[in-house]
Amino acid sequence: MAENAEKPAVKAKKPVNWSAVTLIVAHFLIPTLMIVVFYFYCNAYSFLMAFQRKQNGQIVWTLYNFEFFFNQFGAEGTLMKEAFLNTLMWWSIQMLLTVIGVFTSFFIYKKITGHALFRVLFLIPGLISPIVMTFIVQRMLSAQGFIAEWVMKISGLDRPPDLLYDARFVKTWLIIKSFPFALATNMLIWVGSMSRIPESVIESAKIDGASWVTEMFRIVIPMVLPVVGITLCSNISGLFSANGGEFLYTKGQNGTMTLSTYLYLQVYNTSSSSNSHNQAAAVGWMMTIIIAPLILITRRWMNKIGEVEY
Image (cartoon, rainbow, N blue to C red; front, side, top):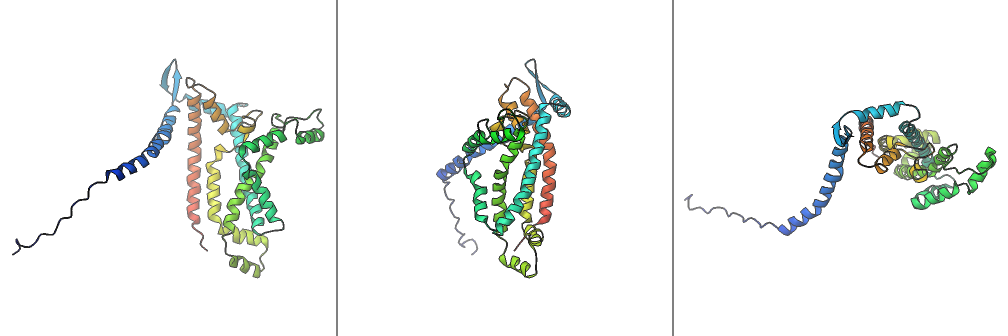
């Protein structure tokens, strides 16, 4: 009886749709190759370059590039030390502008008198093409611009200075120029996050007699702490890439060199037969060693904050 029982029907396997397989492979093949070549291969190769040096047409393994880095960093008047100090200066300015951006965003969020005008004024620099903005700033700060005439009268100079090529003024005006751009970026982030806070929470604080200081530091900022953590992590990851746009305006001349501009010029303006590429790789190696632990610590702190739900 059991032998005569009908066996369950075996479902026939569906034929492979080779057209769909080919489409999927073609869709992912080029992006995968680009990641492998331009990310994994380039990073692995630059990692090895830091330990290589060309001598008499031969590649030798050495720690000379790291020795070069510490010698340049420790000596006075070297271009690398200038670049490092300027980079720290710009990073400190960016952190300061982040704090200023929080206050600016808070008052725009509170819709003070003229908040719509301030919002537009802060956003205009971000709406203009960087090429056009660079041209406008160069013309304004040139010796023929009205600002140079004003600086000449204030400083008692004989002729208008070219503010982008005079070492006495270039850093100051690059810092002034960076303020509206940084505030515009911060304002978009902070106002957007503050706008998500329920109005009922703010109304309850007002009923309890909370001032704007209490509202800002004890209600608003604690409720946007995740954004604070993300902004802090982003700023720390950009510690050694901080700059004031000096590459567009001065190419790092007149005491404005930063590490990002220095590394670019090391790679772009030298031939592959020199050791400049290897020295740049060693600098990048040292930057990674310093930045990676800082980012991990910041990330650990962000995880402790957790999500703020409301």
